[in-house]
Length: 140
Image 1 (spheres, rainbow, N blue to C red):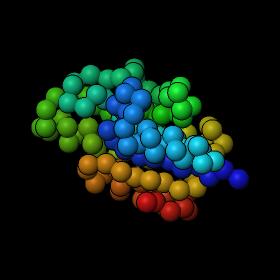
Image 2 (image 1 turned 180 degrees about the horizontal axis):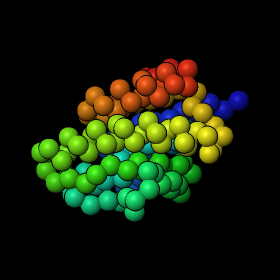
Image 3 (image 1 turned 180 degrees about the vertical axis):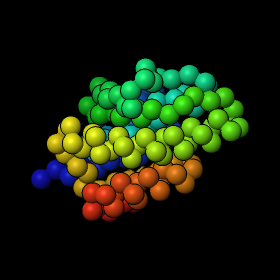
């Protein structure tokens, strides 16, 4: 039975477009070893003040075609630089990823078996812990 592995990283969005990077390759090799990875990342472009996709919905799903992995782009406000708006972006991502996880699990019919939470700020790991607790699973 394939295990569902959810990878949470606020800034993993770039790996989708670059077709490379730690979370992209991790998901790729998990899939090659019979796991079902899903990557969750913010929809806002880091430090750019813009978005990857329409930011009116809570989240949008896109597939990394070369590795056939879903990426869930979670709504988070845009920001420039490292000021107050960036901190608000982090809190919005934290808040929205928790809602997104529950909705995505219900719509997809698949809950995670394990969550890997990785990011430069602690709110992603905190969200991972809370989501894992909700589903009664482990968070790494």
